[in-house]
Length: 71
Image (cartoon, one colour):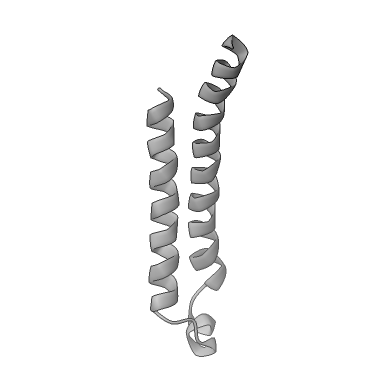
């Protein structure tokens, strides 16, 4: 089960990174930011990356802790 959480976490990080790349590749000039909601374009990928890192950490921390407890 930990591998499923790890893969979902890695997928979340990849999706967030892809959204950030797409946002910055489109250009963040002042004129472009004035026309759109810049916070939404930057916070959504940050949430994906943060949640993905949390899931990946949680998925790896449980097997490591259980192996240390049994040794």
